[in-house]
Image 1 (cartoon, rainbow, N blue to C red):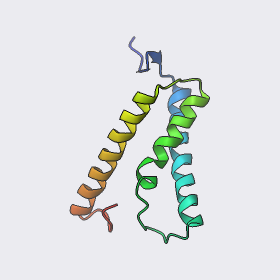
Image 2: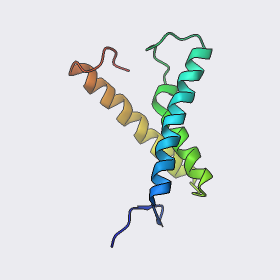
Image 3: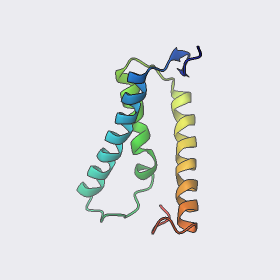
Amino acid sequence: MAAWRLLGEPLGLLHALALSLGALLGDIAGSFIKRRLSLPRGAPAPVLDQLDFYAGAVAASYLLGCKWNPETLAAAAIVVAVLHVTANAAAYLAGLKKEPW
């Protein structure tokens, strides 16, 4: 039976749940930071908006013992940011979002 793999290690249910929870907590932390900066709800915060959930997932992964090299982290951050911006722009153009960010 094939198992999902992340960096050569089996990706178990616990790891998948931790990554999901980390992403949610990262997004919550990003919202908290935006409120402390007195940004109104829905206001853009470049970089923070695109990478808060990614940082939370990476932190959860580290807590589970997954070691990432800097090149992989940087490349993944770029891909995540580009996909995030592209998906938001597409949703805005399709009328699914009120703001393009």
